[in-house]
Length: 438
Ligand SMILES: [Zn+2]
Image (tube, rainbow, N blue to C red; front, side, top):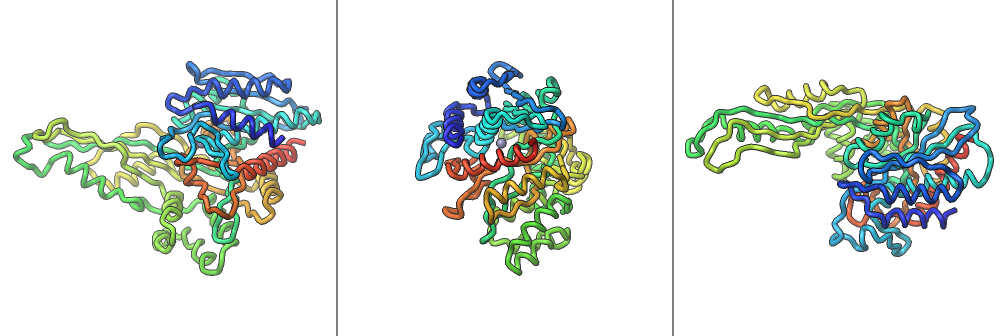
């Protein structure tokens, strides 16, 4: 099983599915052919030219509702000159498999297809259908992938629970080995900010220059500008993590849930990237990313605009984020929502979550599973619209040394996965699916 999973994984990695343009067709066909060889009847669903989704189903008795395994086939761009090995070469070096998509997330595509093949060969009728959806377009916002399937083919992917990306990997915290399982993710509120001014000649400075007005407002939008709102998902994550830590850390972590103390506690974190990641799940955030104003050095423009990438915590609405950002930017700035996506939050008090925790403990007896809130968004938002409970569970075991942070591999240079950690992850996914569906 491990050998054919690794073979399929490497074949998927060699197919360039950089999005844009995505071009997921070849990867979907490879999966379809592989599954068809085992007697499956995979369906290829195009959402655009060569923007292909694959859905396949292992039929059970139907006594209990289906389980969905899901992975996106597209990847983000890679700059080959910054990589040790070619990003689409699938090279194995010293036990590590290199390639764009090794952790985000062709690993899950290869694991899911393999789990289906193994279960089918075992020939035991399960109580649930197991569906595998390999989707396009996640990295560009999911429109031609999970959103498309949910809108146009809901019956193909409707399930009680879904297992997908971001969760089940080793997060080394001191000597503790945590395994975050995503139960919640932030929403998205992309905004345009605009300041009006009086146009004029650049030789005559004026106090209502739109460029200066916008710049001054945006300068106030520092990383901790918006207030802290503790959420249940973060509280459970911190509680689980604190229990594994030495006295000082164990005492400090719960203080992050106190809005007045949170930023001071974050200031004590020795590692800035951890502090930044933690800050982002404590609050709604708003990051200015695009600036637009003027076209000529000697002309004061009539207006200046910025795009702001806003993210909302579970429990927060679009208007809550707008209000908080408006308060920081001040009354001269007008805000308009460009695009939004609801946050997603699932309970971790479910029998399925227990099954996942047990599978993690069998995979890594020293491992501690914890519920997890992620600052970004995934296909979870689309599948949640069908009433599906989505957990991030694409298990990988990372060795304690060399210390490699999963979060830095994501979209990073030299994206890679330990081959042994992939194989143990595959075992855990099979274990969880078998337990849940038998
Ligand atoms: Zn991803």
